[in-house]
Structure formats: structure tokens, C-alpha cells
Length: 254
Image (tube, rainbow, N blue to C red; front, side, top):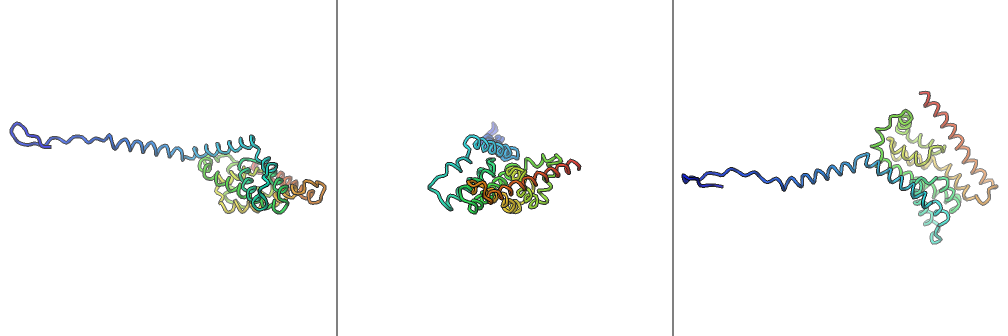
């Protein structure tokens, strides 16, 4: 603005300082929001979410026993392919919640027979493994990989990262490592999706088939089919125990 002085000449008044109160508040709000988003999306926040989800799933299993619902509370309205599809989805979710697969495989054989029970259990196995693998990779991999400092942990990570398909096939063929533990260990490693799912599907066939046949023939425990199925369950378990024991000594000797 021009101001008139005593001599009558007009002079320019000094500029006033701009008011930054308005623009600063949104910037500050944006900065706080960005920091909150970074904290929520940080690896450790995602790992905490994963642990909370797994803890909640385990608590639900203990409280509601979904495996009993699958076997005794099966609705009569469903039948055939629809029942098998619903069972496969429930099977996959139950494996993520730490329900033992042998119980689910026996239930599949008892409900659907040997062939359809095997197909249903395998579909649920691959679905549950894929969901656990994706959940572990999305929420846990970035936070857990820096913690792989132990000798056994580094050896397991290196084996799964370099020889993922072969290692997962062995883990599925010779039970010893819990199903959920193998899923989350593979998710933390650098193993790819396709080798993981393919090895899970192929490696789970013998053990799943044995349990499905045992469930289907449980009413006649002296039949040859039931006895053969039980032998197919016991022998891989014994071989897996021996292999795990020998690998344990090899790791100690390194």
C-alpha cells in the first residue's frame, strides 16, 4: 500500500509477513498421517498382525473344535460335489488354524469314501498351504528374515531357497515337520509359489491317500485295505524320524 507522509509524497508501506497458519496445519496433519501409515505397514507391525491372527485361530480351534463340526455337524442339505467343495474350503481354513491334517484326512475318507475323499483332502491341503504361504510372505517375511542368524535357521533357509521343490517334497512325503510349520518356513524363505504348491500337491498324495482309505474303511479295521493304509502311514513316519535324526547329527557336525 502507498502511504502519504508529511511532505505529501507517497511511500510504499513495508510488506506484511504472510500468514502460514493455514498451509502449515494440513502439512502437519499429512506428516502425522504418513508416519502412522509407515508404522502400520512396517514389517514388525505386519508380523504382529500375523501373530495375532494365528493366536486367534488357535483359540478358535480350542473353543469351537471345528474338526468336530466337520465330522458330526455336517448338514444333510449338501451332497455330492457341493459338500466336497465346502469341505475342501473348510479343510484349508482349518489347517491354517492348526487343526491336524490326519484328523481332517480321516474325516474326508469317512464322509466321501476313498477316491472323492482323497480329491477333497488334496484340494483342501493345497488351498490351506497356499493361504498360509501367502499370509506368511505378506505379513512375516520382511520382519523374520533379518532374524535368521542361528545355524539351523540359516541351513533351513538356504535349503528351501536353493532347493525348494526337492526340500518341500521331502517334507510332505515323510511327515515329521508339522504342516503349518513347513508352510510358514517356506514363506519366510525365498522359495517360489509354483515349486511350493506343486511340491505340496505331489508330496501330499501318498500320506493323504493312506488316511483317506483308513477313514473310509474304519468300520472294518481287519480288512486288507485298512491294514495296508495303516502300514503306509507308519512306514513314512518311521523313515522321516530316522532321516530327521541323521540330519540333526549332520548339522551338529558342521
